[in-house]
Length: 357
Ligand code: DP6
Image (cartoon, rainbow, N blue to C red):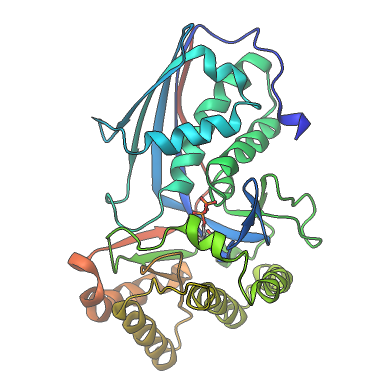
């Protein structure tokens, strides 16, 4: 923690403009349950995506009074301000220089608005990278210090966001099998079989509405959950298995583990007190059809879910034509407005521009 406190505010620029793109991610072993402040109850591992990302630009102007102006898709926005202010209050200790500026933030997502795809991972990581860029400039941070702290502050914005700072895979949470893994920030992982380097993720948009129960509430319900300690043990064991699967490229075991994780996540929701269900009838239809297709055609495609009704289909690049024609023929009927997004494993965030004066 101490290493992330920026104690000198000497060399900071009087103005700056920085912009980054940062992707969303899809967890294979899920983070569900946390302790204050934003520490995971179990370690998690995700594929970083490529096409679903947030682009954020921050303009910094030195000022005696701190202020934030936020624009989403070019429109002035006040509804996300509260979330950003909570985030800023959490990172104040680590990034005190922020409060010497007037900030103008412009942000937009490549994925459709309110598509039910969580934008907090891409949004919070893009914001964090912009912030950290001026600290890198002022304090000459090395690349590795830069990404480490960017992941650390992203986590304070949204847990899953800390994994988006790295591609192709981010691991967050302490686990003996992954050296350097810890609860404070994510680490990058690429000791994987080539088949996973360009793995495909087709996201079927089942329900684009706002979720009835937010992730924040869902995480909280794990605190008094009857099965929480069993679940946390299972996630730890699954990471041991997944490490081997990712290195061997054993797709049958991959499918079995990834689907079990997704369904366990939703079983946790269904057995919380109070219980809730985020899957929709169309979610189940897609799962059923995908299992039929896999069995009949021997195609290694599997499903995973995040905290919502949308279904992610994960499969190797060479199965793309096969799976996409199956999606068009059999699955689009279950998607809202027949919408789906083609994505794949990516390499993490990109710096778009930086200018300091
Ligand atoms: C089901 O990262 O959105 O997607 O830390 O409260 O912002 P907060 O939660 P969030 O939770 C993500 C939960 C998940 C699983 C995962 O991404 O690991």
